[in-house]
Length: 336
Ligand SMILES: Cc1cc2nc3c(=O)[nH]c(=O)nc-3n(C[C@H](O)[C@H](O)[C@H](O)COP(=O)(O)OP(=O)(O)OC[C@H]3O[C@@H](n4cnc5c(N)ncnc54)[C@H](O)[C@@H]3O)c2cc1C
Image 1 (cartoon, rainbow, N blue to C red):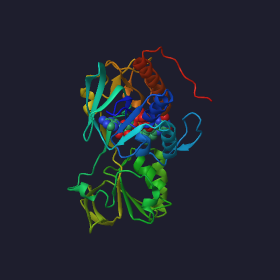
Image 2: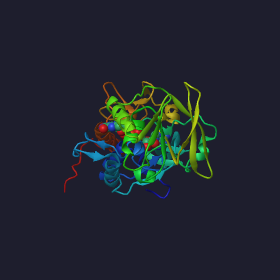
Image 3: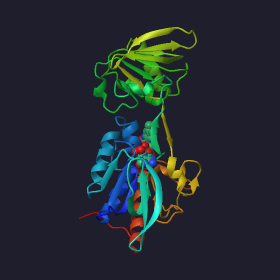
Image 4: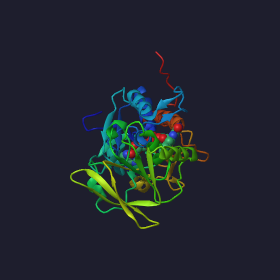
């Protein structure tokens, strides 16, 4: 990095694709900065399924999500990329410096971050969990309200109420059986769950053993406690009955809002509503030296998988470097 903070490549988003792009850029001796809106690396994998196993990433027959992204980070950051966490990208401009046209990125908290090229690896956009419709719910954040299960140990011996009807809610009702206090309450506003039938059946079996309490069609109406959550009021929306349930950990797994946000206003042509259109042979968008890879990059026939994002990261990084240096695109093997 130069004294004015100029790097060759800014990577926007630190999911598996962004970390792979950092590796491929660093391997070609490019200077790199990664900007990520969450306070952690690992994108969707770390945020939504850190303790689940992934079976389809090349070279890893079976690996836990968090372990996979830890390895991606070790590999991607080995050349010393600068990592900026907790900042959401807002504006992208072109500025001229010493006769060179540079990209200038600002975030909600900082910048301008200057670079010669940008690789957008923003997945589905900056994440925000869907929240319960309970007044002042945000006030319980850090006091027993959880939007993710990152480490099971946090829930050890605790009275847990899980809210949601999808796979995450069912997976964690089953996945916390060896950790949380029994029974785990599972609250869903409909009688029918969206989750895999086999998971729902397993939860019903556990219910017959007293290890799960399925509460449907129910909604959390109130949260109470002194400093931290101690209980919740749950209404059965069919009967109108309200029950007070012990709760030390309220885990709401209602999915995420994610939207491209400001990125959609940078003049990049879109593919559908949620992806940036790229030329898949270079991963360049319609804006010169602005590339995209991973879930955020779109072209006909695109498949959104970790492996695909990693391959696209290699294409984007190598093309960005060739473009910056005015060289022909060619691979460089990593073997030594
Ligand atoms: C439950 C589940 C299970 C899955 N299982 C598999 C599987 O088994 N195999 C598989 O291959 N794939 C699986 N996937 C899909 C896989 O997780 C994604 O394809 C992969 O995470 C995409 O990686 P990415 O780096 O492109 O994007 P992401 O992982 O989404 O990372 C993008 C990052 O960019 C950040 N970001 C976005 N906008 C901004 C902004 N404006 N400013 C700063 N930062 C920003 C986000 O916060 C995020 O951290 C699964 C997905 C889910 C939800």
